[in-house]
Amino acid sequence: MSDPPRRWVLLPGLDGRGRLFRGFLECLRDDDVVVVEYPDEAGWSLDDYASHAAQAIGDAPRCLVVAESFSGPVALRLQRRDPRVVGVVLVASFVRCPNLLLRMLPLAALAAVIGKGANRMSLRAFCLGSDASAEQIGELAEAVGRLPPAVMRARFALLRTLDERKTLRRMDVPALHLRARRDRLVCATLAGDGARSGSFRETPIDGPHFLLQARPRACRQAIDDWLGQVFAGSE
Image (tube, rainbow, N blue to C red; front, side, top):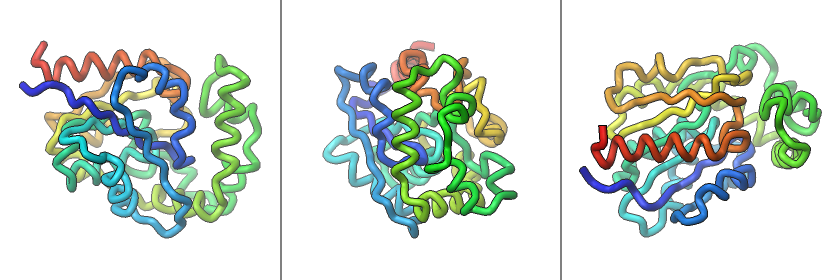
C-alpha cells in the first residue's frame, strides 16, 4: 500500500474560521497542515464550500481531510470531486439533519440561542463538557459570537435539509468517523448511515461534541492508528 498522505487539510465546524483548532494543532506541530477558513457567505451550497476547500489543498498531490461537525458533508463532496483527497476523517459529524430541533425551531431562534445569546453554562454542558477550562469556553463563545446571524441561519438551513447518505455509501476513499460518546448536539448516527460502505470505520472517543478541542491527543492517536492500518497495511 501507499504511504499515508503528508498534508492534513482541516475543515472547521459551524463557526467557519478554524480558530478552535488551536489545541489540536499543538498535536500536529511536525505535520504539513492547512486550516481552511470559510468566508461569511450566506448563500453558499455544499458544493461552494467544497470548491473553496479544494483551493486550500494547494500543491499537495495527496492529502488527508479532517472535517469537524458541520464540514463532514463538505468533506464528502470534496473527495468526490478532487482525486488528491485520499482519506477523510469525520469528527463528531453527520450526513443528515443532526438534531430534530433543527427541523422544529425557527432558524432565527436557533441563531439567537446558539449565537450571541449562548451562555457559557450551555456551552460547557452541550459543547465542551464539564471538564472544559474557562479559556476553552471563552474561545468557543467568541468564535460562535462573531458569526453573522444571516450566515448562521444559512448554515442551519443547509443542515435542516441535509441528506448525504448516498455520498457516504459511494465513497471512493477510506473514511474514519471519530464519534463523541457524550455528544449532546448530534443525534443522527453516522455508523448506520455509512454501514454499507466497506471503506468506512468508526472509533468512539469518550468526550463531548467538540472532540478536537476537548480530546485533541486522543483524536490524534485514533487518526494515527487508523492511518497505519489503512495505508501501511498493518492489520
